[in-house]
Length: 131
Image 1: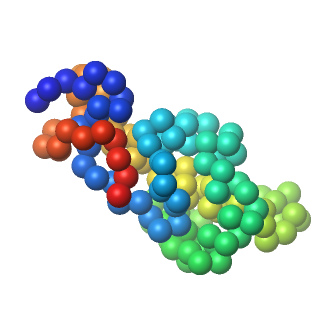
Image 2: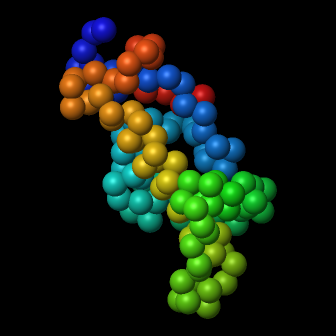
């Protein structure tokens, strides 16, 4: 197995992105920024832009909540200050959590071999890409 020279040269399998995440242009460094700094930092604007989050939750709200519950064992309660702000803020709250969970889980899986200079075993060498 050839060693990766940069994070973009990781050995990874194609990643299946949940339908509630806009994948266009989403690459390793985007995933890393979302995982480390959250959507609120501007790393993933569709989750923190009210009209985008509202639209996504309208189309995929059940999937978003199921995603969170399956991976974290529970759906966190909406903070009191968010509840007072209305539905748009609640959409941003839950969508951001789901996207951050996706990014954190993906980054953990992708970086498992970085300490050794290569990606996970048994995968195909490709640029980090999302299908």
